[in-house]
Image (tube, rainbow, N blue to C red; front, side):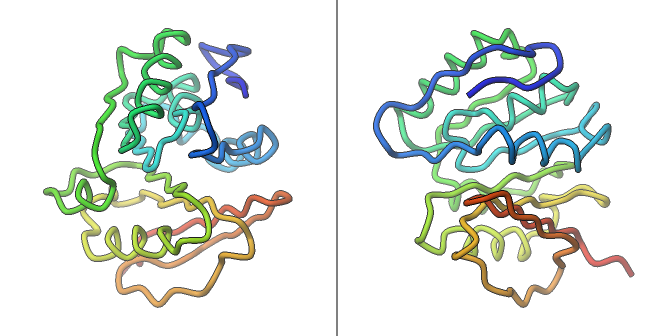
Length: 183
């Protein structure tokens, strides 16, 4: 696991001890940031179920203005902080030790990208997506929600404010892209 490009290019990232996280593969992460492209520059990035923090760290390395990492597991929080310090990207990062579902019940604060990568096979991605759909203030007007799941977990969602506009699979990683419906 490493930072692919940007300020911290090539830096190796620590894994969370045990098997409580499922880090995104370098192939899928590279594809994700190819899709996001230069829109990551100066963006606000929210990394939910942050795990090792590698997706938000990649965003910071590529020029994101700010990244907020939300994670409840203490070993993961320690890993995120260590990875941010190791990459030198901690200045524009905020690590929040909280349950994602409680965090999303707060007053919404708009982000350009909301990345959702919960533990697999528990339907947590659906619950998270629905909470964001109910509080669309979490997204900037042109913002995206990006969900990382195993392809076998996917099921169509009927949402009020969000619609899926793209979906890509990279082996055992599926990325689903959602944006607000435009009037």
